[in-house]
Image (cartoon, rainbow, N blue to C red; front, top):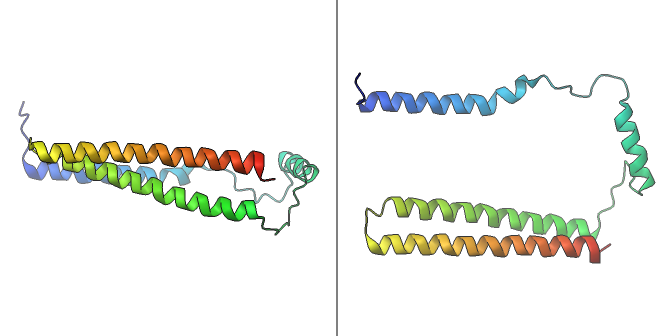
Length: 140
């Protein structure tokens, strides 16, 4: 049994598996055959949920934009961008660490970047928790 593959076979296997993953993520969710809701009949659960929402003070056709919604959208957007930045820093630091080839300076730099990214993530999660508390209990 030959366990050594040439580069062409490895490249072909990578392409095959990447195509398989892409197919799985792009096509298979469409094959679930879930009901779209355009059946023409009223769903009993949907009607009950509308009654509960109206009882809680939410109207179906409300266009009112509150200060809480505006700040919530803005803070959610900022936190999303910061989360993407965390991911980019972690990927960059991981790449730097893997390509250091034992060079002590590059290893230290990449570990410092990972440490700083994790501290940043803790700050981001704390900021989100603080906003969730303020939005839920203080701003009403």
